[in-house]
Image 1 (tube, rainbow, N blue to C red):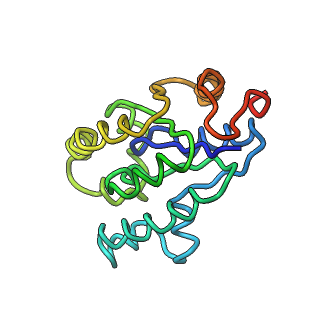
Image 2 (image 1 turned 60 degrees about the vertical axis):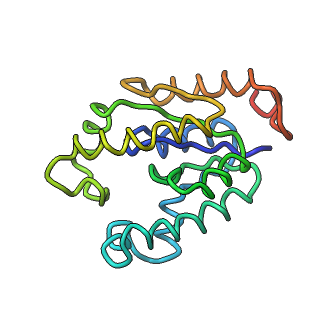
Image 3 (image 1 turned 45 degrees about the vertical axis):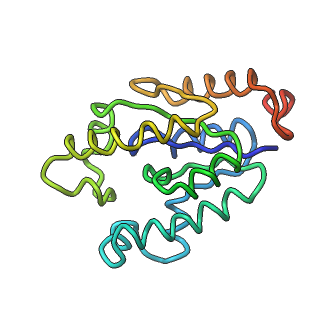
Length: 181
């Protein structure tokens, strides 16, 4: 079974949808940010404080490379995972990439009370999210096999759409219809 890799901005629903998708497919679910926290014993905001964004991105690259070398997992990545060209290559070759696309409005709504988002701990989150989207959206689209809009949609509906679209893709390795039934 090929990996299914979820990319997209913070608040797009990668972790929530990833867990549901993994359950539906009877595959293990992995979250690259949670992996980094487990490996370091530190929260993402603390890593950003101590090592800066560059230090975090280095740790993220190592985690993504290792997670993408596995087979048959559903992987949720951090919103900035696509910033490094080498990450994009690893993600693209690591499995089917699904871009969970969402609006800045929806991101604001979903992240407004979350203090675990170091990039948003500034005076104008809307401006930050708009800037991040301008840079990252083309990168998400570049590596995506499937693009799914998640705004105001129940996660289970999004999962059903993902499953339907995965079935319509020509198999690469061993991703087959029977694995999706």
